Length: 236
Image (tube, rainbow, N blue to C red; front, top):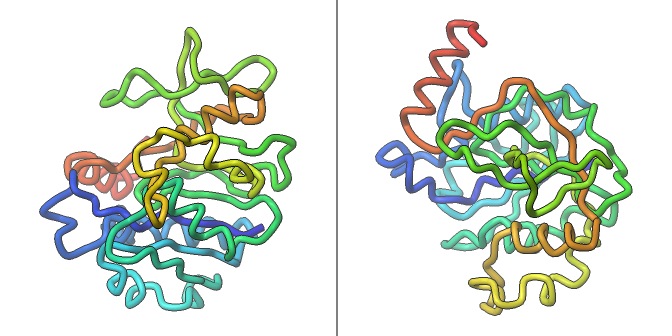
């Protein structure tokens, strides 16, 4: 299995920390966020990793190189000066990911999930790791049914962790599925994954699982500092 790590965003909510440092290179617990992912992916036997870049791309290249320091092989998917959002970025990277299902990891989250426990060949077009809504975003994203399928609405919404297994066929009709979304008709296409996922959910083609381990969305300097303190203190 290959993996794609999203690392192209500008990290605007993290400024001034991200004015000269890409958000995935911000350190928690003594190492950059993205290095935690590289080590965990390698431990799970996932060696071929694609990283998408845009903002401060050269800083990521210089810091990570070819990935050999962590026992992985990094291929770079550069999007240009401006990031293409999650959907556009994944579409841009598809030629590097092949025809089989692949793992997707947001570069700005921390999670201690065992990547090898995720399905390598899900029956659905996407299989998402879901967590309890964090305090800063209590409304959640999707509902997980008793049948293991995810739905756009429901009584109890969970939050998408930013980690999932995707099949390239999710993009087979992406123009139809994201029609009307902001940036969908630009060149290159610049759109979010959410509309694509919601369209697939309406066809019962997205599954999920609940994760109750340690997970954090590093969206602000305060959250970064809190996670760093927790990891250094060995708490939680």
